[in-house]
Amino acid sequence: MAATSLPDKESSGVSRRGFIARTGFILGAAALSTSATAPRARARTAPVIGNGQQVPVLVIGTGYGGSVAALRLALAGVDVHMVEMGMAWDTPGPDGKIFANTTSPDARSYWLRTRTKQPLSNFLGFPIDRSIPRYTGILDAEEFSGITVYQGRGVGGGSLVNGGMAVTPKRENFGAILPTVDADEMYATYYPRANAGLGVSTVDPAWFEKADCYTYARVGRKHAQRSGFPFVFVPDVYDWDYMEREAAGTVPKSALAGEILYGNNYGKKSLQKTYLAQAAATGRVTVSPLHQVTSVAPAPGGGYTVVIDELRTDGSVAGTKTVTAGRVFFAAGSVGTSKLLTRFRATGLLPGLNDAVGAGWGDNGNVMCGRANHLWDPTGSVQASIPCGGIDNWAAGGAFAEVAPLPTGIETFASFYLSITRNPHRARFTWNAAAGRVDLDWQTAWKQPSIDMAKTIFDRINSKEGTIYRTDLFGTYKIWGDHLTYHPLGGAVLGEATDNYGRLHGHPGLYVIDGALIPGNTSVNPFVTITALAERNIEHIIATDL
Ligand code: FAE
Image 1 (cartoon, rainbow, N blue to C red):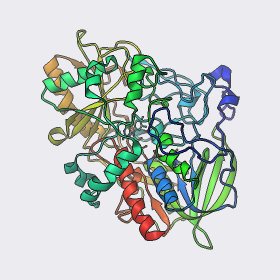
Image 2 (cartoon, rainbow, N blue to C red):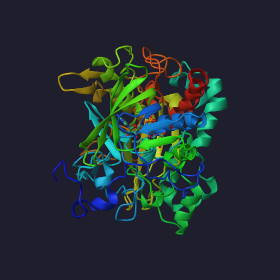
Image 3 (cartoon, protein in one colour):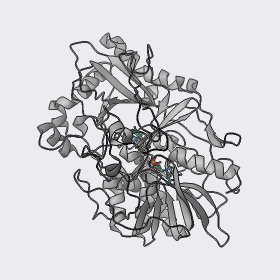
Image 4 (cartoon, protein in one colour):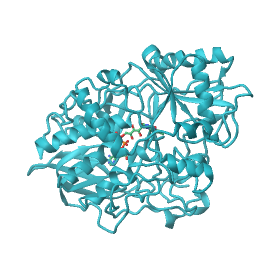
């Protein structure tokens, strides 16, 4: 398919008419609801941001940081315009579903790629990637030298594609995560506020013990405990009641149909159902999907001139708009925000930004692996795509391992893990003027400390169980998924590129409010910390700057 043409039904399974994203809308859902079946933030006919428009506050990106900023500013009486490069994800395709299944990726699945780039690239050693039409799909596999960074694209950001694991770090680890932030305040006020806003809860332990879909997690627990590691239940934003009804066969399946990487059609409380729905209810928040910010510079009369490309679903530019914003919040995610700021500093658009912009980027120590179990340890053909437990060896070995699903629909006798490790390496974004792009100097070899830390868990379990690593999931005879991260963090670190509340140095009225603020590692999955930090910072900014 030509890069400029829209995917058609024949080639992609997605019809043109039913699947072209609506571009004009105001979020207009009713009150905050944390129910799985609650409406997503709804579209209403209204103009998207217009050329020449003046707005008090513009938020770049609709992930966790952006959604918190928009809600809190709107509740404080400020009109907010959110600009999102991805689609609205509010319109079902011809299969009646908004999102594609993990096992059958189609045009909806990837951001402007002609071939899937699945995190698990192989099965039984065979490559499983396939051709797809180029489209503004939901999962971006952004490639830098040495690492592929997976990110969500669309209204809701990473909340659209992630596993929903909503983990508050242990208090004793917080000093290493955000050294300039008052831990007492975070644990007394902002972590609880974030957990409430996100709708976080934990699986019912009694149901967990008998649920077929968590056979894999119980096998993971058994193996961990037999080797002397603590197994901990991990909270999530999935609606557990809904999952129980999925298992009972009374509602359409979502987690139990293996939905995760390319969106979740029913049970997960993405930001569309929580913060963004509540923001919409204020009537003060508008969102422009398929709009990508390309430039921010001081405006002659005060505030900032923001240039925005309106995208078509093949990624081409339909038009360019120039608007003026009193204040701009960078919430484009660690990579998105870092890339914008690095370029703006290097090309003179924002000359006041300091040298810390682009620095301090880390991968949260992500590394994946699988283990081959004995035939008497099946992990189940139906696996809930939502992980609910982990192995905590952070203090002794620097690794926290999610017991993750392999939702293939067949019995694999495999245990699969995503480990978060205390990897010390930090990379830097730089402007490559010759190529006209921002580079990241991460090296694949920098994953070795992560592998060593993950091995503190899995070498011991393999030795105790008499089992081996799977070598067929990331290539042929390759044990470690060391080429990727799901958890990009840093690039505009709090207290370095910004002050201690996210105000960018050198340009009053510019703020960072997303994962770019966090210096590379959160010791657990990051979005609760991103949300809690955003809650802390926006409260202070509203009180002092507005
Ligand atoms: P993010 O959510 O990435 O939002 C940024 C938004 O900005 C995106 O929607 C972009 O499309 C948009 N954007 C970027 N550039 C522009 C531009 N120039 N103009 C307009 N819009 C732009 O940022 N974390 C957990 O805690 N638990 C999990 O279980 C978990 N699982 C994950 C699984 C996967 C497959 C992936 C990819 C991530 C996972 N994460 C998980 C990570 C989590 O989703 C991520 O840390 C947060 O989404 C980051 O939040 P931010 O607000 O920083």
